[in-house]
Image (cartoon, rainbow, N blue to C red; front, top):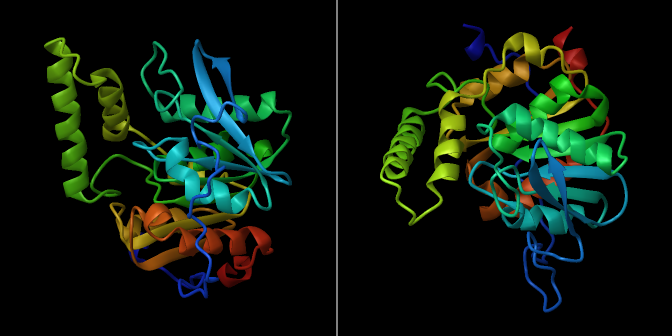
Length: 286
């Protein structure tokens, strides 16, 4: 099976020397990431307001959070990358300060939201760093809006919503949570926002549906990232890597799906190294 044929893989080192300061520490005048009136704004996209914030100066870099996250979840990445880049970070549709809208939640609609925000900001192209669902959206940006993408870092993305890509325990949890939301909506329970919980879990349960042919259309360099303790099967991450023409692979040792919060220095410096470097690796596949 080609899933298991790793060939020659270029892996960025997971053993990086980290400076003594902590990037995630707080300061008295630190902005309220995700609720920053000075940096935040909303756009009406496909009938729903979509909220985003902009930090720093330099080349544009888009940060995209995961399914259960929001702008605030990406605080360690905002603080790190805003030192060098113009960071655009959004509450994905239905999360944080962004509205869900009347349509069902889809990865393609969120991808279109990202593209429309970049168009509104008159940004021709940007680096895109996405975690989990954000990694899926990053890949979709490269497939459907290639002119908007310079480089991608896709962390813990999956192509299909099945046990080929995901470990069964996680997929079973998604299905259980979706059924629970269905039941509570049927009972007209108002103790939580069951609609968005239903939509979020339905999206993970039935989407995405990205093919190897789709990946092979990606022209920009892509760092495919994961960990060896992730909810995504390691062989699936390798499969994504093997099907993108200009891809590098990095699997962080001893880390989990939540490395962006649990060990942000490792994640951030690994990504920074990739963005700073010219692509190397295509000659390995000759």
